[in-house]
Length: 160
Ligand SMILES: [Zn+2]
Image 1: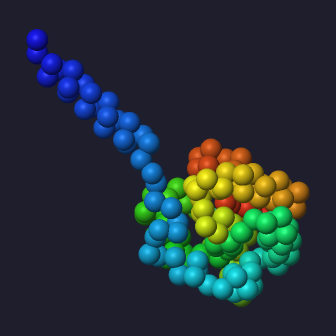
Image 2: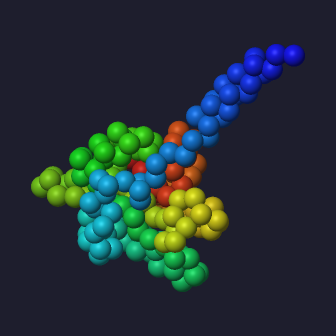
């Protein structure tokens, strides 16, 4: 019996599955992440004045509960943002790039991850669940409620 057709079909299915389940590059893996290397105080100072105290409270509460929370991004330059979009991370037009009237960073969004498990390690899911609770209690929008893209590290001020 000729099994070539079955092998061909199997290959097509395997390729389709590999395509559908392929891991997207994550933000921490990308070279264009200048602002991700800023110190936490600098990241906080680059956040919008309404967002900053909320981030301080959320980070403080997570750490008080024993979670190794890492503030990954607040502000991202347009160059960094464009690099993330080009790399296919799912990053979109973003509140991370917001500036104030003087043109200085005033990010309306932040990404907070588990310091060792990042976005996808075993502790990431329970960490993000708690992050979402705390963020919503602060009146922030939480990207863990989104599906395109699902973005559980992301919190942002409501409004424009
Ligand atoms: Zn984000």
